[in-house]
Image (cartoon, rainbow, N blue to C red; front, side):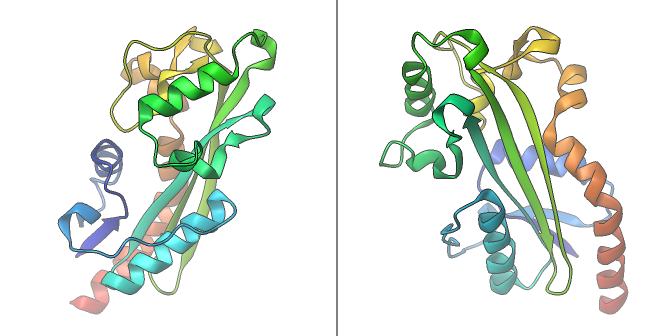
Length: 204
């Protein structure tokens, strides 16, 4: 039995695979298949994550987990937000996006640089739709980062006050305390496990 993590982001898939490794199913991602990308035409992260799980379930007829989210900067009225990689009017790279945020906030006081990484996660199996949302709050640093963690550009510029460092510099123990996916999986896993057990029984 398989559970599809609807992403081509290898870093994200690795994180999910580790979090779901006790479900007793094979964890796969979009890179394992030929697939037709689901168009993310929603006006919100929630809209898009529902489109993704339902769209990929229709393609593969297996339980699906998808997420959608991004950085919301308060003084920029929540942008980049749902625009994500097309915020600059084209499919921008992680470095271009990070540089653009820093540039737009040039001269802005620290107290006005508040921002959050928002993530919506959904599970869908044709009958059951589970949704949840988490946020990680901090503020945007005022200098270009020297590195960006592959697959997670916003972690390079979101400063987390309780740990006095940017998100990507957190050690594993610190990351576990605030990581949105860890919290979301902990919340959703009991429901997902029950549904997957029902699927397993039907297939036996």
